[in-house]
Image (cartoon, rainbow, N blue to C red; front, side):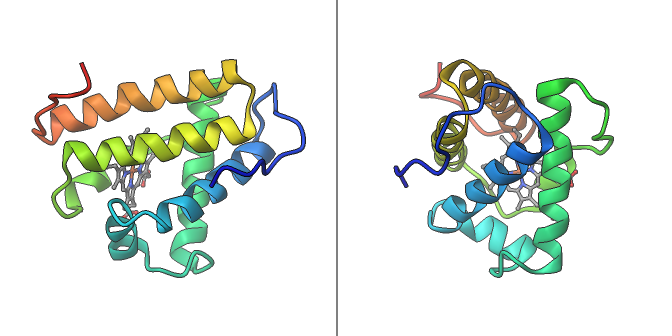
Length: 138
Ligand code: HEM
């Protein structure tokens, strides 16, 4: 997906633009066969169902907290990943590539980079905690 979904790039993070970005991200995820099986297994393949609605809300809180410092996310972000089917470095690379793409569709390069950096740091931690070898990233 390379078309611009936003007329102007956002230079400020707020719940409204996070909400749009998160929904677009999962539309992109569902088109990617490396990553979509994990989401389909956990939440189903109807992006409008209740499970997905709840997931969007959780992810909005999560990114609001990471990007604005607002303490709206109080859960354990890593825990649900322990219950998923086995993931690999390639799974994280595919996830990160889509995330990089979506944040650049919505935000100025500087903000997009800040989002991406946060996601990259967490990806590395998740991979460490899941005992996934990280060869090509460093
Ligand atoms: C290989 C890449 C990844 C896959 C396949 C994946 C998959 C998933 C799935 C299926 C869920 C829903 C689990 C459930 O509700 O039962 C989930 C939740 C979540 N993921 Fe990921 N994830 C990945 C990477 C990441 C990364 C890098 C981050 C952080 C930057 C992240 C942040 C979250 C958060 C915050 C939740 C919600 C946790 C909660 O319930 O509070 N994920 N992920």
